[in-house]
Image (cartoon, rainbow, N blue to C red; front, side):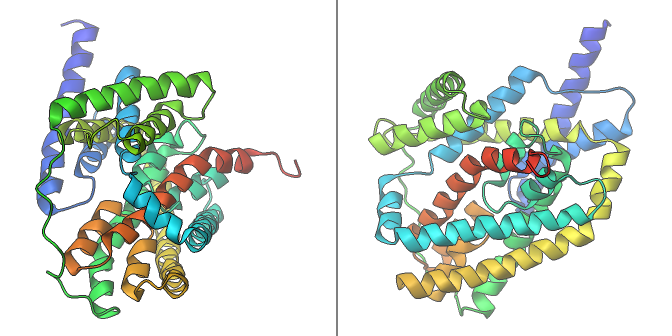
Length: 353
C-alpha cells in the first residue's frame, strides 16, 4: 500500500472512532457530542500512535462554513423584536458579559504557557463552537481553547437545572410542547447551507472579513433568515454533526504531550475562573430582570454564560419566556463572535503600542 493509501486508511479509522465516540456522548447527553467525539478520537490518535495526522484543509474549511450557517440561522424577526423592546438593558448586559469573560480569561495569564489571546478566547462566554473554530486563525492555542470552552459548557449544563430549581423555584414540565413544524425539509436545508456557505465565503473574502469561512456564512444565513428567503430552512442535523466532528478532529490531532500537560496544569485556575464567571453572570441576570420586568428566572437563563441549546431546552421545559431568553443569548453569541477578531488584534498589540 502506498503512502497516500496509508494516510487515507489512517484518516478513515480516526473518523470511524470519532463517530463511535460521538454516538456514545450523545447517549450520555453531553453537549455537542460530535465535537467531543472528534476531539477525543483525534487526541487518542495524536498521542497514542506514531506519525502526524491532519484533517484536509478543504474539510476543515467546509466545517467552518457549516457551523457559521448554523449560528446565523438562529436569528429571526421575533428574536429581534424581543431585543428591540429592551435594547439598552440587553446591550449593556451583553457588553458586561464580554468584559467579565475577558477578565476571567486574562486571569489565565497567571498560568505559564498561556498567552493573553488564548486565555481570553478560552473563557469568552457564548458561541463556544465558533470561538474554537476561529481560535487558530486568530493566533490562539485552539487545544487549550477547546478544552476550557467545553469545560465551561459542561459545568453550565450540569449546574443550570439545579440552580433554576433550588434558587429560582423552577419546576419541570411547565413548558409548551415542541412544535411539530420541522421546516421545509432536508433538501431545502442542504440548498440553504450550500448557498449561504458559498456566498458568505466569497463576500467575506472580498471585504476582507476576519475568519471569513465562519463569519461570512454566519452573516449570510442571518440575512437570508431575516428577509424570509430561507422559509425556515436550517442546516440538516447530520450535516451539522459532521461539521462539528471535523472541527473536533482538527483540534484533537494537533495535541502533543507537552500541550496536554499545559492544559492539565491550567485546569484548577480555569475551574475557579469559570465558576466565578457563572456567579457574576447570574448577577447580571438579576440586573437584566430588574430593568426589563422579566422574571428573575428568565434573567438568569438569558445571561447564563454558555450552553445555548441546553439553556433553551431548560427554558422550554420549565415554562420560562423562551423568546426573551433566546433573544439575549443569540445577541450575545453574535457580539462575541463578531468582536473576537477585534479582541485578538487588541491582545496581540505590542506593549505600549
